[in-house]
Image 1 (cartoon, one colour):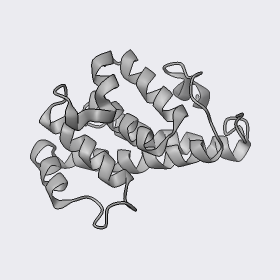
Image 2: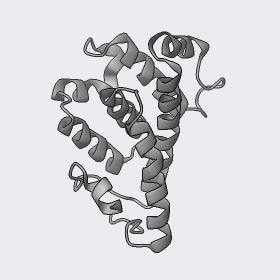
Image 3: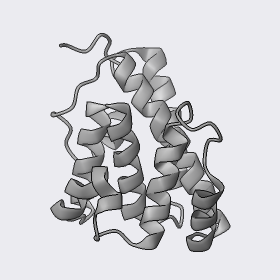
Image 4: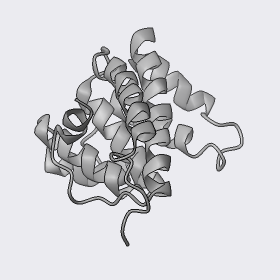
Length: 161
């Protein structure tokens, strides 16, 4: 299946993408650890079935030094031993924040308490913004059928120059 629409070839879409990238830059430059950022983005993208974002965040994570073992276990993070308690809290927040329609209360008090235990206010602000932003990115890519497989690390930043 080909993409329905090229979001990188339309003037309005490119203008929006540049502003979207600026918002992501705030998160990228935050004190939230970069590995956590990539793991959260990857997990939300897996849940949403976004091939483009899975491809992007897997490759960006590898470029940032993430190990294949950890990347291969993101989808089963509860059943693995390779993630810290802090990363597990962030992954739980990513899942619950992504599956809002599936969880009657949204993010559980238990998950929120775990996030509060491991992250300071600036990191939490970045984490909440990241979950919202990656879900928006997933939806755009899924709507237009932006497929995964062709992404190269740094490509998104370069395209928005």
